[in-house]
Amino acid sequence: MSEQQLSLLRSLIQTRSFGNATLQFLESLLLSKDVTSSIEVRSSLTRLLRSESLSVIRSIAAKTLHEKLLVLEFFVRAFALVGDLQSCLALRYEGLVLREIKSASCQWLQVSPVEWLHFVEDAVHNGFHAVAEKACENALSCLANNDVQKTRSDADSENLKDVVSEITRLRNCAMASVASRSDASSRVPKKEN
Image (cartoon, rainbow, N blue to C red):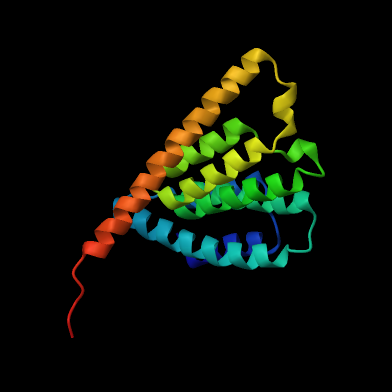
């Protein structure tokens, strides 16, 4: 990957070109002939995306909800392409929370229980247990306050119970993992001066 290609990608992001063409260009930059080049390219692209995403996200604070969600979705997809799961999951979570907050006034933004479940599964599967635990709490809280549950059929209610049960199971798994890491780090001997 050349410096010119990296500059072009930066320019596309800075000019707010958040469409499929930019993602396809990003994907084309990832094609490498050898492993060493591939690692270097991914590293450079990850640094660029992290830097630019922070700048862009700060600059869209006053934009419409729709524009914010489109930008978040673009960066989620971009981070997924370069294999930066942490950034991808963080922005997915921000998008879900933003939608849930705004769903009080716009019902169509409401995050479905299955969307929460998929996010939690991805977070747990990739080792982001603290984020998964937080997402589970958010999901269960949203589900408890959700008026849509009242209008569901028996079949839908049973499916919802299964989803809630799975979210609860994953929350417990995530909590246990976070606690075990906390216990392990507290048992690591401290260096003496």
